[in-house]
Structure formats: structure tokens, C-alpha cells
Amino acid sequence: MKKQVLVLNSGSSSIKFGLFEVSAGGSAVCVCGGAVSRIGEGVAEVKFKGGSTSYAASEELVDHGASIARIVELLEEHGTKRPDAVGHRIVHGGQDFEEPAVIDDAVEAAIEKNIPLAPLHNPAGLLGIRVARRAIPEAPHVAVFDTAFHATMPPESYRYALPKELYEQHGIRRYGFHGTSYGYVLRRLSPVLGAASPSIIVFHLGNGASAACIKAGKCLDTTMGLTPLEGLMMGTRSGDVDAGVFSFLCRELGESPDKVDAILNKKSGLLGLSGLSFDMRTVAQAAAAGDEDARLARAVYVQRVRKYLGAYLVRLDGRCDALVFTAGVGENDVDLRAAVCHNLALLGLDLDPDANRARSSTDEPQLVSSPASRIPIFVVPTNEEAAIAVQSVEAAAIPLA
Image (tube, rainbow, N blue to C red):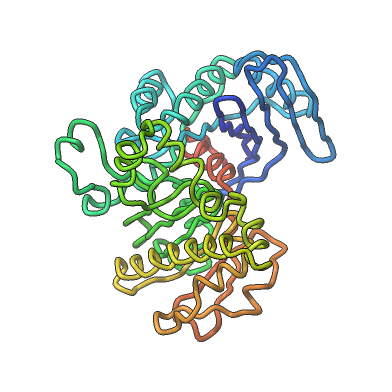
């Protein structure tokens, strides 16, 4: 028996949505989807696609409530039944949530409590929950947290070397993000490896980028921290940087904390180093054409990935069942994968040039390592929305058989 799950990703001025058909065995297929953007500006942009149907228009949708009501109308116009469940992507669950949660008033309150940890994301997600629960009251609503996958990290992975009262009183610790993606990749790759709980290293490389060290099917470590700013270099985020840079910019250059936060989150990374773009494709093209700033940006990006790859191999004591690349850059940038794996045969990693450049026509895990590679290397396309749909059915205990 198949069930339909509406997945909502609510932003401050937009809502992305997809209706998924979930089957026994944990598969989820997108039936239709779209987005409502520019909410709150009076006239919103509405896009919808399902099968051969495509729709795009400007409509008077004044707020999130009107936008979600319109989404429900679009689904009904497409001939779909009311969803059996609604899954909500929530960025930060703090220390309150270690797995998806069926939403009630107490769950809403806990999400609201964690707003200081994700002030740009959690308010919009909470607003989406509240209006969707009113619009679709008959279905269970489930919150799926980006941070939940990393709840298995031990204290030596998640604690900062800061006064312990900052952790005990304010929850200042490392949480990690992209957890829905990591869970999806782990679920897809485990049958291929023939192991229910493999030990793998996954690089989720998109505009936002992170890595996860997974031991025996559980997260042991990850690169993002209290916020998504820590770790790998990203499209516009700096990644790891000396914390003294923040105080230097405030003290010596007279910048406000908000301005420095904007510099580190929105003006750094590929954009900051290249001076061109946050998009790796643009940076790669410029580097190939001889632009030195673009070449440096790409080189720094690669070395950050290699640094964490080496660290995570050590965390696993060298016992790694697979190295995985996923998300937009990880799945599509063949030259970057080659650069990351260059000269690592002594560590058990040997990329096959032909397999690496071959384009898969499916969303199945693609082996790109050579037969000589002790550690297999895979490209696994991620699908966070499909993962949210499956987890929503599981959390709400909706029978599929």
C-alpha cells in the first residue's frame, strides 16, 4: 500500500514543496512539486510541475497561510488526494531531538526554544508548521531535523574547548547539519556494501558543504558545528577560520558583529577567494581559463576536503568501508573528485579515471574507484526531500503493507 507525503521546506519568503509516493521498503517517488517565492511582497511567484503539467504565474498570496492553502489547491487540481502525512524540514533541533518527531504543541515549543541556535532558519520552519497544521489538520505532521543524524556523536566530537558552563547553560556545542542527506546516503549504500551498519566517510559538497565520519552506521564526527559556518569551505561561507578573525574585524576595522557575521556567511568561501562567484562551475571555468584567484579558490577548497578526509580515516583507525561524494558539486565535478583522491593509493584510495568521468543515467550508487582501491569510492546522488518523506511515514507509524 502506497502513501502520499507532502514535504515542505519553508523559508522566510518562500516555500518549496513536493508530494511523494512512499512504498514499502523505504522508496519514495516524487509525484509533483514546486515552489512559492516572494511571499510577503504582495504578489508571489508560484511554480508547479507534475507529470506533463507545468504551471507558473504571479498570484496575490499575502503570507505563508495563503501560500500553503494555494499549494493544497494545486495538488487537488492535479488530481491528487489529500496527503497521508506532511513532513517538514527543520534545520536545528538542538539537544531536544535525536530523531524525527510527530508534531504537537510541545514539539512546536521546543523548535521555538531553539530559534537562537538557528535564527535564520527555525522561525520560517516553525511558521510553515503552524500554518500547515491548520490547513491540513487531518494528517500527522512530522518534523525532520538536519541535526538529528549527528546526535550519536560522542562528547569528544561535539564539545568545544570552552568553559563548560557555556555548554551546560547555553548549549554551545557542535551539532552538525545535512543529517537528512547523510541518512539517505547511508540507507542507499548499505545494501550495495552488504553491510547493515557500515563505516563510511561522506562528503556532502554543494553550495553548503560538510563531511560526516560514520562508524558502524552511526555518526562519529562531522565538520559543521554550532552553526553551518564551521568546517569545509563553501560557496559563500568561510568554513574553518581562526576565531580571532572575528574580534580583529570588530576591534581593528570597527565592523559590527552583524557585519562580520555577514562577511563570514555570505561574502566568503568560493565567492570571497575568487571574487567571481559562489558557484563552483563558474569558478572551475575561470580557473581553467587561467584566472589565478579562481585557481586558488579551487585549490583551497580541495585541500580543506583532503584535510578532513585524512582526519576521518584516522578516526576510523583506517577501517573504512567506502568514501562517498554527494550533492551538486560532489556528484557532478569529476575533476574535483580526482583532485581530492590524487596520490592517495597508499591510504587505500585509488580513483578510476574512466569510471569517474562516466555519467550515470540512474540515481543508483556509482562505483568510481579502481579494482586496486582497498576502499571503494562511490558517487551517491542525494535526495533529502525523499528522505524526509520516508522518515515522516516511519515516525508517524503509518502502515505501508
